[in-house]
Length: 339
Image (cartoon, rainbow, N blue to C red; front, side):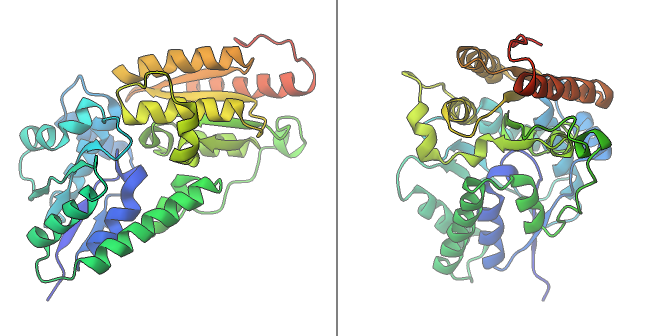
C-alpha cells in the first residue's frame, strides 16, 4: 500500500523548522514532499492567488501551496503563534491557514496545527494530537523524539556557523552544487580582505535565493564570510533584549542577533539588512538596527525586496557596499558610514 503524501511548502516556517516536521511526518509513515526552490513560475502562481497587499514572502507561500496542491494528500500549514520565546509571529503567520483556504480552490486537506508553545508540554501535546488525527496506527513517542533530535542537530550546526540554505537543501535531497569560482578581482585579492558581513533578516528572506537575488552566494563569491541571525542561539540572543521587547518573534531575533554581532569579537565589517516591502514590523527593526550600527561605527545597507526587485540594481549595490567595506578596512578608515 502506497504511503500517503504530505506537502511542506518551501516558504516562511520551512527555513526555521523543516528538520522537526520532516522527521516527525516521516516517522509517522507519511511521505514528505517539499516544493522546489522558488522560481519565476512559483512566484507568478503566488501573485495570481494571493491578495495584492501581502508581502512577497507570503505571496511566494501561496505559489508553493499551488504547486503542491495536485501532488499530495494533505498540506502542512501550521498557524505559528509562539515558539516559546514569549513573542508572537506577525498577523500574516497567525492567519496563514485562513488566507490560503479562502483565497485558493482545489486544495487537499490542510493540516492546520496551532503552534502556541507557551508551556513546556505544549509541543508534546500538539504532536500527540496530530498523531491521533493523521496517523492513528503509528507510534508517537519515537516520532516525537526523532523530530526533536533532528531539530537539535540543525540548530547545533547553525550555531557552529553553517548556513541554513545548504543544510536544508541537503535535508530535502537537492544539495547545492559546487561553488562557482571566485571572480578575478577576488582571486587577486582586490576585493576580499577577509571581510565579515552579517546578513540580517527573517530566515525566509535571507535563505530564499530567488527572492534575494542569491545574495549569500554573491557575497561568498566575492570572498566575504557571511553571518546570519539564525546562527546566534536563543540563549546568546537573550543577552541583547530591549528593555521592552518588540511584539514579533522574528523581529526580536533579527534585532538581538544584530546587537550580538556588533558587540562580538568576530570583527564584523558591515551589516546588510534584508527586508521585505510592505513588512510593518521591519520598519521598526530597520531603524533600531541603523541606530545600533551607527553607535558602533559599522556601515549598514538595507535591501528592500519585492516581486519587482531587479538583479542588476541589487548586484550593483552589493558590489559597491563590499568595495566600500574593503577600502575602509585597508586604506580609508574615515570613509563615511553612508558610503
